[in-house]
Amino acid sequence: MSIFGPTEGFAAAFPDFPADLFIGGQWRPAASGRRIDVFDPSTGRRIIGIADASIEEGIAAVDAAHDAAQSWARTAPRRRSEILRRAYELMRDRVEWFAELIALENGKSLADARGEAHYAAEFFRWYAEEAVRVVGDLAVAPAGGNRMLVHYQPIGVSVLVTPWNFPAAMATRKIGPALAAGCTCVLKPATETPLTAYALAALLHEAGVPGGVVNVVTTSRSGAVVGAMLRDPRVRKLSFTGSTEVGRILLAEAAGQVVSCSMELGGNAPFIVFDDADHEAAIEGAMIAKMRNGGEACTAANRFYVQRASVDRFAEALAGHMSALVVGDARRAETQLGPLINGGARDKVGELVQDALARGARRLVGGGAVPGEGYYFSPVVLVDVPHDARVLNEEIFGPVAAIVAFDTEDEAIELANQTEYGLVAYLYTGDLARGLRVSERLEVGMVGLNRGLVSDPAAPFGGVKQSGLGREGGHHGLLEFMEAKYIATQW
Ligand code: NAD
Image (cartoon, rainbow, N blue to C red):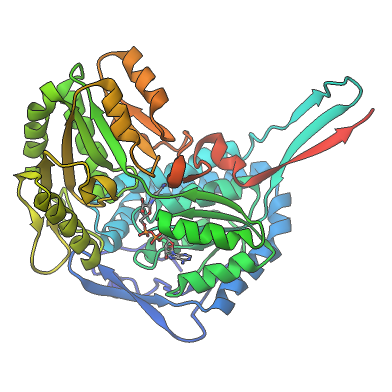
């Protein structure tokens, strides 16, 4: 059975799309028969109903992961590497298929979805390469007598929880390193975008991943099902990507069994432009940092701080680019900006704009919620935004740019750091010394220095403060799924 047919007219053309739970290498319907409806944000219409797992079915997935754990941990790294490489090749060959599916259930434009599918596949390639590069240490103890041997072992059964905004990449960014490290896992994707996760399960199965190594369960009771998994002593790792609010709940739940946690949480990224910056490059970077994924990204530029002499020119240029974007159905080729994920998201973005206007901000580009089918929101650019406006203090998650002027370098740094979040900051300047000096003082896990995009499977992605714990990508991402074992030796 192959699910990788044409995506046009999804449900009808996909009689074989399982839409069931994937446990122990088998597709199985939820025993209750309950299904969760999945909607197309471009039309608001139902696409398909997927299985709604119970707590028992969540634990059955942990059973399957546990049963497969020893054999997968013992599988030669070279073999694990080859399977991941095969997964990369299969996904690379089906980028268009995945792009269609992502655009359908998430609503991002096809161009964005294509970008995500490539990015997601690259995690399989990178971790295929990392699987055979796990190196330990051997040192002479400072006292001189004995030797200290350190080697890395798979941490064990891992629960992976992912958000809707990058349905493919957030899953492969976890599955890739987990499998490379020798861990088995249970993936619980967001109920808004489960189809991509199930398609990845089918692809990994085809690539040769043995049954039980990757399990996927969807549920309408995330809290109860994930909570039960975290109380199961066989689960040793939680890798979560989502909101800070849910991350806090899960950290508390993970404390019960002292489960190792990697948390990729929310952001409130500043985008700083100094007067000495290359204006064209700053605008180009601003459009990428703001509009990748239609603004629905944890890395999205949320607050634009522009030095006083450049602010009018920057705001006008950004307004020009934002208002020129073609808004429409995500799967139409000409669309540059698809809908937001659902009606609630559209209402929240609208409220943030209204709040800023009520507090005295000026609107350079109109836009706002578009009435009718689908959850469209055309771009808005705000200037003179007061510091207490919600738009500067909460994740916008939509196509709204809020611009504030600043005077000095110290002021820019102070403003940028005035948030509980610390994921990423962007900074444009023609003076490299200033760029590095400011980068060092920004309280973030990542800096885009004269770049509007930081994501790269080979780099450690993650935040400080309330944006999270741990790193994904690069060699760091592999170590999140491993434990160091120290063997004190005497010979
Ligand atoms: P969310 O926190 O609502 O949900 C994330 C996942 O957690 C989903 O699978 C959801 O079903 C599940 N979940 C919700 N409540 C739960 C509970 N009580 N127990 C267990 N699981 C639960 O986030 P979202 O709305 O899907 O995604 C948007 C958020 O994700 C934003 O805050 C964004 O910044 C963040 N995000 C962060 C990164 C990063 O790498 N730092 C990347 C993408 C998204």
